[in-house]
Amino acid sequence: MDNIKLDVLAIAAHRDDIEITCGGTIIKLIDRGRKAGILDLTEGEMGTKGTAEERGSEAKDAAKIMGVTFRANLRLPDAAVEVNHENKLKIAQVIRDTKPEMVILPYWIQRHPDHLSASLLGYDACFLAGLKKLEIDGEPHRPRKIIYTSSFREGPHSFFVDVTEQFDRKLKAVATYKSQFDGTPSSREIYRPGVDIFEYMTITARHYGHKVGVKYAEAFAIKENILIEDPSEMPVRSI
Ligand SMILES: [Zn+2]
Image (cartoon, rainbow, N blue to C red; front, side, top):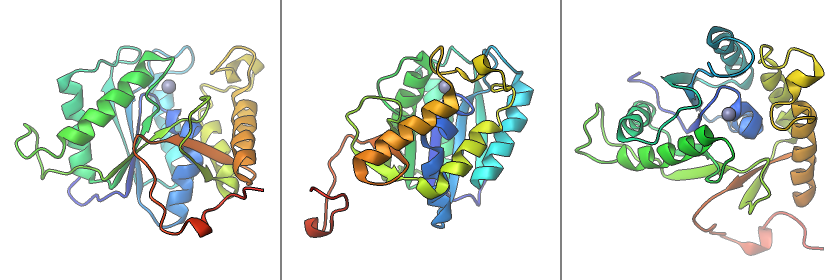
């Protein structure tokens, strides 16, 4: 893994989490020449549908559609991702190996415990990876920027990314998870009963897009402030 130097590493608990929450943004960054990678923490073996193997090859296909150069899986136990030092070190090792400038994490408030754990582990791993004396291999590296996917949350959202041109490919990437979405109406209801995930993704992205004057957008939160060089050029009309 010596030669990998990513611009962006997205970390999430389950295969398909990244595609669903920020797939459009990942594709957009790659369209703009950035190198992006994905680290899935579990193999999704606790999912009601599909085996870990099926999900593995689906994740590869999704990565190909998105154009990511790196995708790894830590094989932590699904539905039992614990926030402990050992897991932080495992993620810190991947951060050192891939040296991303930016890391994308799940939002810090979550319904699924694994998503919350991924968020907390990811933040701590970013910090720890920069410590010289940490008991792992490689040179210290600390990502400059951490952004949190807040799509499907009420907010507060810090900013939106226009993914209008990438939206079809995002849907295609999610659709590769055939073991999850086998075409029967109920199989597509992974977020809430009675809600088709493709319809939900589309409505949500349209809603966020509407807030900023584009067709489709994805939402993000950050903990720090945004610095603007020239406020007169700030996008999004006031009136
Ligand atoms: Zn998930």
